[in-house]
Length: 177
Image (cartoon, rainbow, N blue to C red):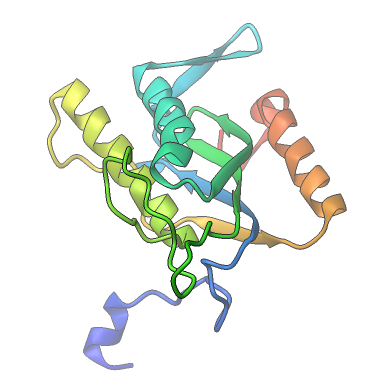
């Protein structure tokens, strides 16, 4: 192993796959050092902290910034976030399949890959959380994220049910709790 190789992580993405491809994706993002930052369970119910509300609100704003993105099931947990995101076909204009520009959008043509969607969410939430806590440049998220390409309606329903039941399984989840 070369000295610089120790600084490069192996990619967990599917080699050669175009992550801007229309389809359904399951994503999981975990807080830095698995800190219970986004809330806590009280009497079996997830109560979001201010930071958890920021994650929820930024996620719900995603389709405003990226109109080809549709949100499926999602859950904000004390130290992680699960979601299904759908990348839809880009609406195209009359000239060379150029995507239509929405004049009301704050940003021009953000990248439409799954990685850009996650990067945008992590960036926006980190900035807002750190601004609210007065902790500039403090890490909120672990590096990277888990993704899974959903390949059937049955798989979509199974993952949506997993997300919906995640709060019920919190106490017995050895990976996260």
